[in-house]
Image (tube, rainbow, N blue to C red):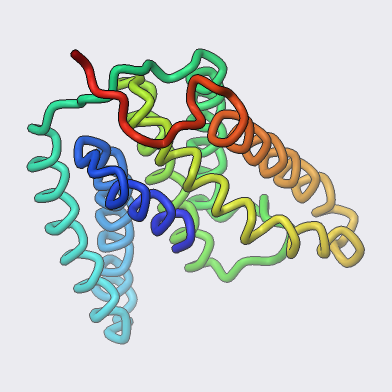
Length: 212
């Protein structure tokens, strides 16, 4: 929620509605996969308690698809390109999210704690949706498609970094490597976001630099 809110607040502040498609695509993938899973459990296992969750996810599929199709028609006015190190990092994040998201959907134990099987699948859906968020930034490498992604990752990092470091003293040995890898990703993505959002003179201005 922090990640989504950070990007949405920046889009509202900057007025750069052409940055909406990446986030809408992210939500669409998460909602589509989650609704499929919820309704599968309802039909296959008779878990009618999940009908409201499936209905809400289906509503989000509709809302996000409308948002994506509408905002895709808006011109990208940002003149700055996404810096090459950020694009390379987006590629790394994309591959990492696809691999970890797929592992979670297949309920492989990659988290530093034991997950409920249903939670594992839903987390996997979220990770795969996030992969599309960074994929869009790779396909359309304007800085307006980089600021939101980095703000989202920074918010995500700030929420999780403390609790994950606290786990180092309690995690079981077989899960410690996964925790260390996760912390490394948080530290790298946080450092990347801080540098390009607050330090680099070419990109620290969050206002849109319009072409022409």
